Image (tube, rainbow over all chains, first blue to last red; front, side, top):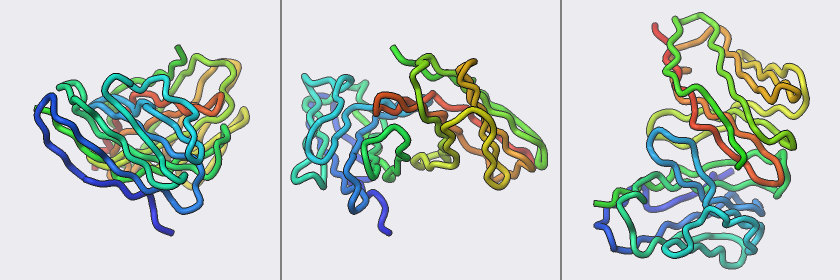
Length: 115
Length: 109
């Protein structure tokens, strides 16, 4: 079974530039998550999709971050314009259903450096 | 604000010893509890899940849950250098999973 695919693996940009990350979840997984992990901290949920609908985006900085999940499969997370504090690893995860005992499967992440 | 607290460590144990990792959470309505292992530069991977009070054992790993005390722990028996990693406690409630900051574990050969 293929895992969660993410790209790019690394990205370096200057502040005020824009950047986009892509995620393809495990086949058949209905729920997709984007987490931000700053060095030394635990993952922080940015947005959670159930199929192509948003379940939770309460911690997404909507003035600069946007995300979409077209057709309930792939997802794209965009930052525009980027700030220095956006430097982090962006993790995509998926789970089979949207239930409380669901285990999350993570992709390899995208390490973003904003200079 | 729902919170998950962990001692950041580092926790250093000799090879073959028992490593004990602890986690507390603030939301009494939490239903599911997970331990993820994260090697440096890698993404988290699930190693244990527990849903009811008591102990759950899987190989060298034992998860313990006490909902009354809002406390979750992970014991690693016969610790190996390959267990050196950051261990993230995750708590799920209301279809939302919140992670702690993680405890760094070093197992000395």
